[in-house]
Image (cartoon, rainbow, N blue to C red):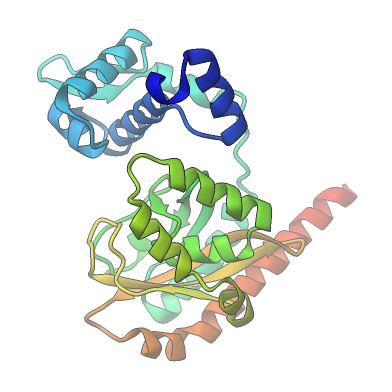
Length: 280
């Protein structure tokens, strides 16, 4: 790095001007996220999860222990989050209106069609689940809970979010992805080229055949439709179904109208919620 950028001062200016993430920080954050999602991990599991050599994982873990964000379990060599990790969210007020408004609608939709439905928002260059009905149906391989993340270009919800994002936001997301160490640029170029923003906007939905970045890779497909808040894209509502049960075009024929109607009802309720609150 020093040979490429000359010195730390020049590198610092490059980071600020170009939006390039600092590699050591992104790795540490990735380690915290991996440990938090799985409750506890061994050093080898951390190394594999964040795709770094074992010695590098050891240094990251020791740093996080020093900062009090993780700790080693008393009886085994596994690492878990500490209460200190909660301080990272201090001052953040989670907007629960979306979940509050959407929950009865997605429960009713799952009751009608059988398949699980989720609500996801964009966080950085990933999509994060805010709510889902996976626990409310038997037609699922796994239960997905709030906080589970999906890559933005490899999920129906992510493609939808990209299509309805502003041009500057979309370019910034792609810029982050281009400089991310763990993303193959050739793959990114293909994924970006296949993202038909105009078509997604025109049709009002996005699809992902065979989801590869979930807990059961290749076994499910998804259809996502937009939820709006005062005319602005707020979240993606996604229906997930078994690949073995039906083809994507069959699922679109059977469920797209119902999905759009449910998303429209959630959008209307969100706007009404905001209007009523403004009048109080």
